[in-house]
Length: 98
Image 1 (spheres, rainbow, N blue to C red):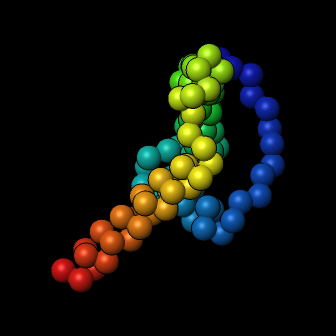
Image 2: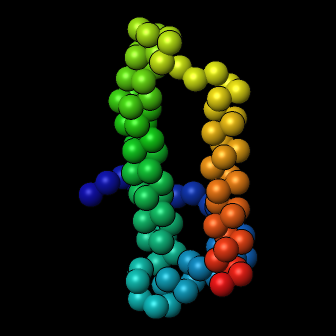
């Protein structure tokens, strides 16, 4: 059994309602169990980000250092972002018009 430490936390009314609903629905035995489950999801998410940074981002950084000609200029990056954004806006407009 893991060591238990007692903490007092303050949550928003919306978060409290969510926690209470999870317990009332029987998904969790207590508010502490809801918070523990949420923290475990956060821990997993942080581990995934750390893994991504250490593998894909680090590898890409090493590739760019080895061959800087592969890199895009900030103008090219912004142009690409604007193109993607404009395409998404057009798609949303088409969807809402339909």
